[in-house]
Image 1 (cartoon, rainbow over the protein chains, first blue to last red):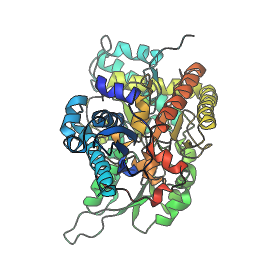
Image 2: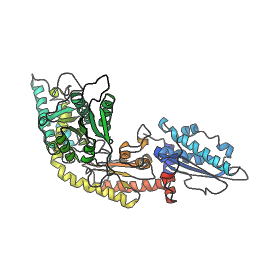
Image 3: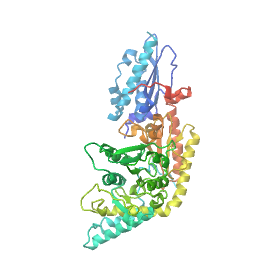
Image 4: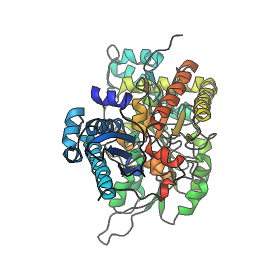
Length: 127
Length: 413
C-alpha cells in the first residue's frame, strides 16, 4: 500500500510525541483502541483554565503509519483551539488532510474518538 | 560488494528465478514450443522429453519415482487435488441423513491452500480435526495420534510452516499413519529444496511443492502421489483430456516444468552448502536483533527451523508501522494491517501468542544470494525502527509503569 506524503511526513517526524501529567487538573487524557485490533492511541490535552484554550497536546500511538499520522495531526490541530472548537474536529477532515485510503479510515475514527475521550476526561475533572 | 537497495528478504513468499533455471527454460518458449501431448511430430517429442527429464529431476530430489509426479499449476492446486481427491475417492458418499462421510486431521496453522479445502469438505459432510501447534510451533506425532479415529481417512500436516519456518515431526507422523493405514499428505512447499525431503524415509503418501519458492518460475508445481504400498488413487478436480494419468487434465506448462526440474536439481546439488551458509546468516540476524532489543521474541523453535527463515515479534510496536520504517527492506508482517481483514496472523495466534505479539511480528526470509552485509544492514535498520516506535508506544509506557496489559480493559472500535 502506498502512503501519502503527509502520512509519511507525520510518521517520520511525528509532532508532539510525549506525555502530560494525567493527574493534573487541567489535563485531559483519552486512551482508545485495543492491542488486539492493532491500534492503541493515547491523546492528552492541557487546557489554560483562564481562557479555555488548549495550550498543549501530546500523543503516543501503537498502530500502523496511518494511525500514528492521524494522532500526530490531531495534536497539531488541537493546539490553540478552545474546547468547543476542538469538539468540531471530524474524522473526515483527517481523512482528507492525510489522503487516507478506505481501509485506513478507522485510524481517523480512532483519532476523533481519542480527542472526544480526552475532552470528556478534562470536562469530568472540571465540572 | 556494494549494498544494493532495496533488499529483498521475503523469500518465503517467492524467490527470483535463478539464471541457470531461466537458461534451461528459454528454449521451450519458441524453438521447442511443442505440446507435450503431441505424439505425431518432433515438436511434441522434444517437449515430452523435456517433461520426462524434469520428472526425474523432481522425483530424485524427494526420493520418489518419476511416475509418481503429477504436474500442477502450483502448490495451491496440488493441495486441493490431494485433499479433495482423497476425500472424494476414500470418503463415503453423501447421504440424506447427513452421516459423517469420513474424518480428516489437519492443523490450525496450515496454509490457506489446505485450510480452505478442509473447510469446504467440512461443509460437505466430513469431520475435520484441527490441531494447534505446541508453543514452539511444532506439531508432534503424539498430537496427531490423539485425534485418530476409526473413520479417519486422511492426515494432512505441513512439513515446515510458511510463516514461522518451524519443521514438524513428519517422519514420526508418517510412521504413525502407516501403522494405522491412514493416508498422509504433507504440504512441503517451504521444505522441498531447502531441507532433506524423502518420501520413503518420511512415509508420506502425498506431497506437494512449488517452483517459485526455490528459484524457479511461478505457475509450476507438483503433487507426489504414491504408487506402491499403498497405491494412492485420487479423484481428479480438473477434467478434460486425461493428462497426468487422468489425475490432472490440461496442456502441460512445459517451460515452467523445465524450470521446476532445473530448480530441483540445483537445490539438490547445493543444499548442503546452502544450508550451512543460510543457517549461519539466519542466526546472525536473530542474534543481532535479539541481543539489541531485549523485548524481541523469536517465534518458533530456534533449532528445528528452515535454514533461511526467522519470525520475530516486537512487543508494543505494530508490524505495519515497523515495515514503514524499513522502506528499503522487503519483509512481511503478521499484522492485520497487511491484510484485508483486521485479524492478525492466525498462524501466530495458533501458537498461543497474544494479539499484540501477532500484530507486531516480522518474517525474514533469506535467499541463496543473501549476504552478510545485507543482514548487518537489516539488523541495524530493524533496531533503529523499533526504537523509534517504542518512543511513541503507549503500551511500552504502560509496561514500564508496571501495568499488566492483559488486565487492562480496552475499548472496542
